[in-house]
Length: 191
Image: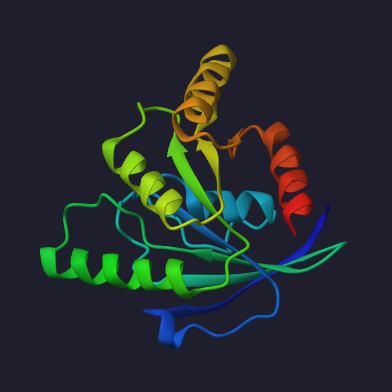
């Protein structure tokens, strides 16, 4: 599958303000600053498509992108990161409620849970995975920032994620695009 173009569509604070699409839709989930926006920019070959930041907690809305390919177009929904503590409890609770409602009531093709290769799997990554599994939401994993660790370490981490989550896991790096084709092939199979 080759990506021809990509465009930002809209940001929505909650499910009721999300537009309806008659396309496959993938929800991107992960801890704050895990690299979801960088992933979008890299697979779409557009460094300015999704806003990136070194500061965690920048994504606060559900950001929708339409990706046009040589096969079928699809939607990516970039969700606010979880595990960011520097916002009020009230705001954290509001994000949690809005994300749960979106994930439970939206007709998703799959959720994609991102894990940072530089760290061990975090407690809130496991909690998110268990919640997705409990609610029968199809999911696969992407191990981000793989350029920060050795190839052998990447393989170990992928095996650990697959064992822990019982999901397929794919390596990803914005600097080493060899991983991109495997992810795009997997998306093509699901669509």
